[in-house]
Image (tube, rainbow, N blue to C red; front, side, top):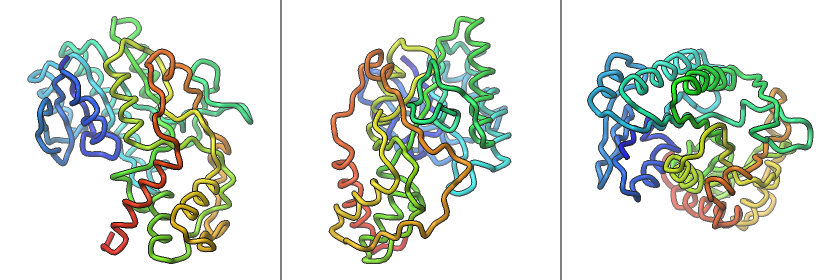
Length: 303
């Protein structure tokens, strides 16, 4: 199989490239910043939004499968950024160029931000309402609707993988887990919101492994990439405080709550577990401990 993967240097992309490279496939890793060349991985440095160059790449590579991870997810701004308009249009064009060049499988990357589940329920691919409130979520869902409609009538094997809340190596330091880790490692107060929201946290390396298996399977349609377990933001922060051995440094309620977001976003992972055959091999606390030790080692550096 010849795979073209966009966003290869990103937080999720770099680990997905590694997960796919373990198999007997060719991975053409496309990103603005080229990734290191390795066995089965061929770096391509250009922007997904450069339509002319992207069309030429598809004509040259003739990928049979496309994994589209690239999007602007700049911390603190991506939910409302006008660049979502560019990425929605660019993603639809990317799909079109891929199919015109002969790709028969397309794996698009969505988000749990597309969901509006009933209170107290998990996000189910088949039954939960899709009603995003952010521009980011709306743009993602728009891409899904357009590309899946075309795929259904043109014989394209189509997958829409919705990612939940990821953490781990390569995560921007401003986000929840690394920001708390860094403050604790430095012996400083770690401010968070009230922490009441329930989320589905998963190590990015586990998510990449799940994506890799999904790409190489024959599963189609919408599918959640998450742990299937809900935990409050506060519980995650308190776990890190316990792992660090720094009691009393967590400052709960200092940061404002994001009232525009769903209070509970937890994946129903039946499809992922049964159809893709992926289950987590490590508990959340172990992954959080690994992550804390990594940020602890970096805490003396300028980040």
